[in-house]
Length: 204
Image 1: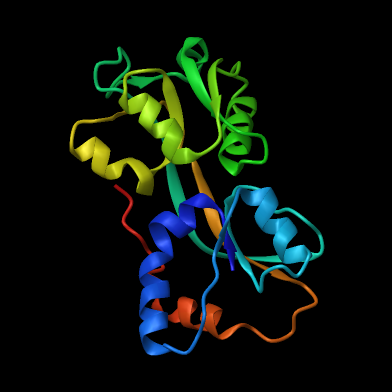
Image 2 (image 1 turned 30 degrees about the vertical axis):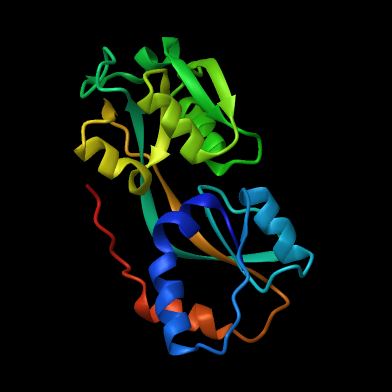
């Protein structure tokens, strides 16, 4: 299978572990990449299926089945002037922002959010490949970034990060199973996942 960062780090591991314990003879190979690379691997028959988190559906030869919605939060260091504040979107435009790399669904989500609300994009402070790396820079005290709730909820609870709330904005993306439209039979792991995945994860 191929997976973008969010599902393989925060959602799929317990499902994979339980499936492997029930099916010890099954060999797993997991490829990690951004949404674009996952789609390409599925299209090129390099993997059986993929998991992606995105707000817009991609290639016409691929089938995307939504599993669950994932909230996304703006995060800063607790010492930041906007920490725990509720602000209009235009106030974020002047902030030094950590952007993800091209091909990242999080970058697509950020841009579409500001375009939807007619807000200028935030200042480019850094552009980094990788969600974890971006979050660590914010934890170290620099800038602001947009991250899925799953990835930052512990750091917020521990006081390493803080949220910035945007007026009248509910930002989320969906987790999709990505398969080829030409595939007729559903893979047994996908069948297992649909039965065992909590369809209503906690939204803090």
